Image (cartoon, rainbow, N blue to C red; front, side, top):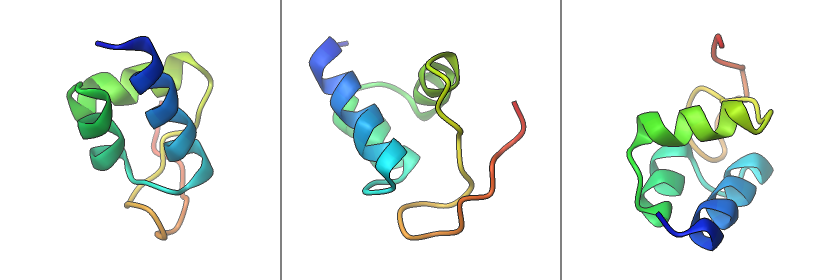
Length: 59
């Protein structure tokens, strides 16, 4: 996994620009791995994709 791609994908996800699936694809990781990295970085994982309500998913 490329660190820059992962950081960029996490930033785009956090800003609501992309959903978790798109963020994971762009970083070259699984959706589950992306969820783990987001949570470990203190970023709230939302339900839905970009433009969807931002209800947090349980940690």
